[in-house]
Image 1 (cartoon, rainbow, N blue to C red):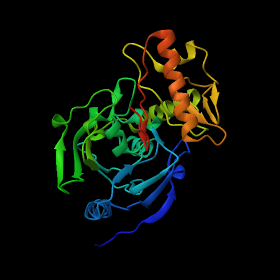
Image 2 (cartoon, helix red, strand yellow):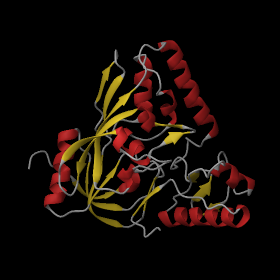
Image 3 (cartoon, rainbow, N blue to C red):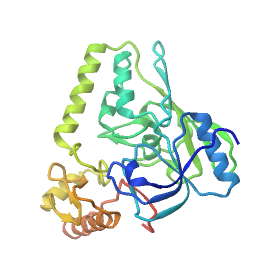
Image 4 (cartoon, rainbow, N blue to C red):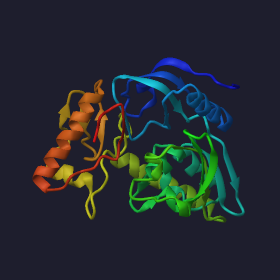
Amino acid sequence: MKNITFKEKINLSNYTTIKVGGFAEYFSKPNNTDEFINLINWASLNNQKCRIIGAGSNLLINNIFLKGLTICTKKMRSIKIESHSGIVEVEAGVMLPTMSNILAKKGLQGGEWTVGIPGTVGGSICMNAGSKQLSLANNLLSVRVIDTKTLKISEIEKKDINFQYRFSPFQQNNLMIISAKLLFEPKGNIEQLLETTQKNLKKKTDTQPYHLPSFGSVFKNPTNNYAGKLIEELGLKGFKIGGAEISTMHGNFIVNNSFANSKDILDLITVIQQKVLQKKGIFLEPEVRMIGFDYP
């Protein structure tokens, strides 16, 4: 099979934003869609479990040896823009901050908020990532996917995808995202779009611990409430287990400030859940995707 290159026994902590992770038996970073598809085919033909990671944000990987093939999409960075129509076709590995700045420079409106999301397009669609009431699903036209069981490649329209708050069916099915078509509003004021984009980024960096390894947000916001607010009301900011700490800047962030391991972080997540449930009567559901755990 053409264009199959991978490394063995790779430390995945280098590929997560929290800087924690086990070792991948096989690991590859495809440069484009063709290489990505070939890797999926190889894994299927060789009966290897296949897992996909993007930017590694919102991801906790256990400190264990992970059998099978781990694919990182971050080199899949093709962006095709139709400025007159506002249609944008992006590969799964395109970073949202990169896309946000490119859209603003092209006068396409509606992606300014994504500048503060430290994830890829594929990961953001899979997790239905967002900010406040906004999510990438709002701009989605269709997703191109490959089925890891049948190896069939297909394009799914947005109307056929059941998006929910921080959830998409791609978290549970066998479909891996290759690329997406998005729609933004054309003919925007470039100067204003760039200014808004920079303001959005500054607001994020001023209120969230971007200077330290973290997931991004740890918990989904409960209905009519905020996870960070609940955690802060219990005085938990700064609480530590091992090298994992609840950020002093934002209650819904856990930072790795001194060689935390996956157990430190999972234990801290569990303690937060227990305390909020005990004191507030609310169960906080993790937004973080977990790999290599028997997490319920």
